[in-house]
Each structure stands twice: as C-alpha cells, then as structure tokens.
Image 1 (tube, rainbow, N blue to C red):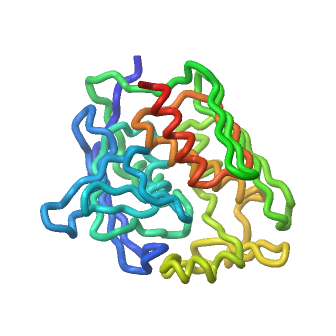
Image 2 (image 1 turned 90 degrees about the vertical axis):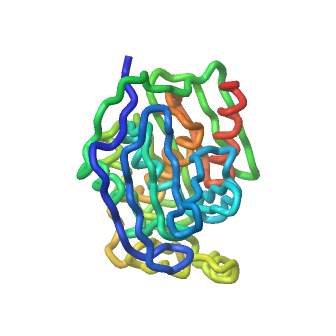
Length: 277
C-alpha cells in the first residue's frame, strides 16, 4: 500500500498575481499526515486557514477560488495540480495575499518547487478517490464523463476556432513524470473578447503575454510562441488535475472532458464527493 507523502523541505516562490496584479509570495511547507492541503493567509490576523476542498469553492470565474470565514484564496488550481501530480498528500501553502504568483502562466514553477523541496513518505496509508460508478455532468456545450479506472487518466477536447488547430485534443495517464513533461509547462489563455469583461470584474490586472496566450481572430497570440501544438488542451487538462484534488484524495479515474472549464470541473468534484459519502 502506498504511503502518504509530504515535502522534505520548505520552498518559496514570489512574483506577480494574475488577477490582483499585486506582488505575491507563496511558501510550500511540510505538514503532518492526514492534514491534506491547507492554504494559510499569513497576511491576515491570526493567519486563518482554508482547506483545499470542493466544499470551500466560492468562485469559478477564470480560476478556482476557495474560502473559509474571512480568508479567501484565488486561483489555486496550478498549485494543486503540481501537488496532486507529485502525490503530495499533506502540505501547508502559506500566502501573503489573495493569490499565488502567476509566474509564466503554467504550473512548471510549482512543479519545480516540489522537485527542489523533495518529498518524504509518512507512516499513514495514502487515500484514493475511486469511482463506484460512472458520473456525467453537463453544462451548455461542456460535458465531463468520469469512468472507473485503476489509474488517473484524462482525455480532453477543446475548440475555440483558433489556429493552429480548430479542435485540440490531449489524452494520457497522469503520473509525476508525465505531468512534469507534458502538462506542467502549458500556459493559461483567454479569448480576446473576454479581456474587457475580465478587467471590468477587476480581474487579470497582472496578466501579460509573458504569462498567457490570447486567442484573437483565429490566431493564438503569445510572446514566446506555443510550447505545444495542442497547448490549450494540455492547459485545460492541467486545470482538471488541480481542480480534482479538491476531493481531498489522490484520484483514480478516467475523466473525459469536452470544452471543460472551472465551473464544470467543480461540479464534477462535488459529484465525486457525494459518491464517496
């Protein structure tokens, strides 16, 4: 039986937050077994904590936001994706503000943090979420199907009418190694027509072409150029890996996603929690 893991050492990352545009610092620290992933707002009185759980999700506009009491944490999905893929069951994520650094818009900096910190096995057995029956959630033209599977696999299809491919596809089993090589480097993106709406909502104040791709007039615009021909599908897959860790366990299932996003990801996570009751 696999054992729970935590970090061997503490590590930190600093930079600009995507939505607030503020300077942000994030520390990843070891935690005792059966702690789970806990976000800690050290800038607030008493350093309140927010457990990484689908039950604590309060907003899914352009990212996943969790909250407990007066403590709120924006865009947790990239940090959670890296922890999930690395099979880190227990960690404290200390933050000095509302949001983690966006870095280059991918999960690669967080994956590298975990590599730098190292991981260590703990005495308790690892906990897995496994499917007892299929789950289907639909919302408009988006759909997610979860099937029983003895490993963690995601098949993702997206379509934005953008070059180089109108429809992008990714499918693969999620392991520590495959995530680091195939998913972590993929960057966030948005539609150009969404930017005005996002700015009106007070979001993406820290966004730039250094940390995101923009889809406009059938083209994908980013400073560096695409890292993968199907980078959009890979990043949506990355987001699913992160959002699914809100069930509080390592996931064993095959998730098939058509045009996914955070709203339907969290709907699926909540259905998964219901099935595990």
